[in-house]
Image (tube, rainbow, N blue to C red; front, side, top):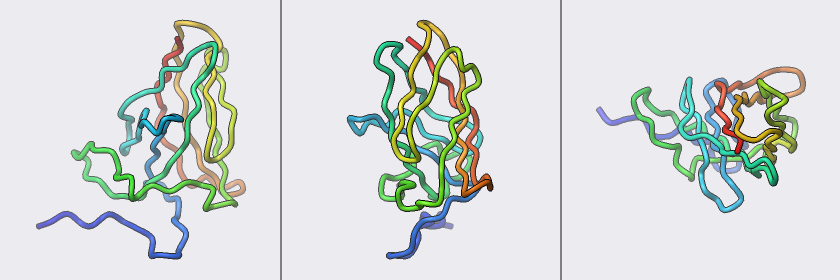
Length: 142
């Protein structure tokens, strides 16, 4: 039995954020830094103390089996600039180690002390309703 095709919105229809929507973090050179997969992440950002790390958030509703750890295909990615009523909240566990500034598409992790580490959770909301919360993402501060 062949796997189901990736879930794609019909042409002209905006994508939707659901509880199973995955997140892909891409740096300014279009390199994938990390992507979520169900209850964990593949990869982790290394955040410089002096300059920080600028990232774009892409989302995917591509359905993957639990043992299929490949990154969602780029064709399935969308950004929240297509969903103006959505916002992103970045919850950082140790706010003395790093901070986040940005919007629902682009942002910057800034390291606040060298040789540290913390975690960050990405929460997507529409107004006050949480639509999606990804598991904690490990951040390494250098």
